[in-house]
Length: 218
Image (cartoon, rainbow, N blue to C red; front, side, top):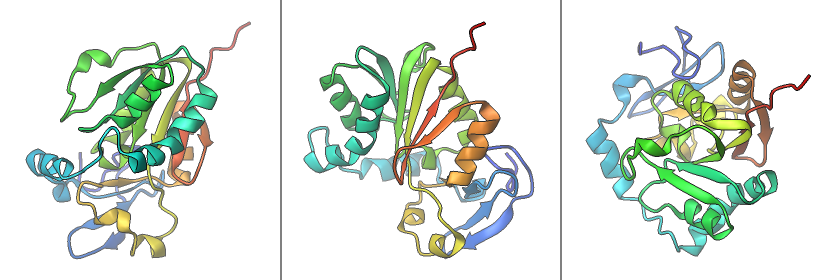
């Protein structure tokens, strides 16, 4: 991918958006996605080391309360029984455990901690990605792949903090994490959903749902 090529929509020539002491941030003029150019991405071993520092235990009550912000609206949209995937589950797949406790069948996938590609199979009722999309080097391709695994009517639930404006971006704690390399806004989610033919719903300040449409029956 070119240094200024948008990793969400593929457009070239993103504009300068912000710079700090560690790296620069670009904004796509087509879809509004804000991203860190590839030259400032961590190598895989350093990225893994950052994730290993996270302390997100499956049974941690505070972590479960955080994940409930996505789990609750997912339960409203997807009744039991249903089969899903927790994508980017990390070393402590708490959300998968919570959903299994609620009666769902849930597989887990993570490129570092659960790298089993056999679970990436089509026909899923739902996929969750909590605090994942901001880490993706190629979010456009990855999200398209995930959406393609959903059955018609299936849901992709995402949790990520959203860009509000340039001024607040400059002091935003979210960009201090060196593994965060891509930043959605409501504008960029709307653009991507429209291009991909998905229904978009904002279920909270940082909770987003995308639904694969059912085919029109004649």
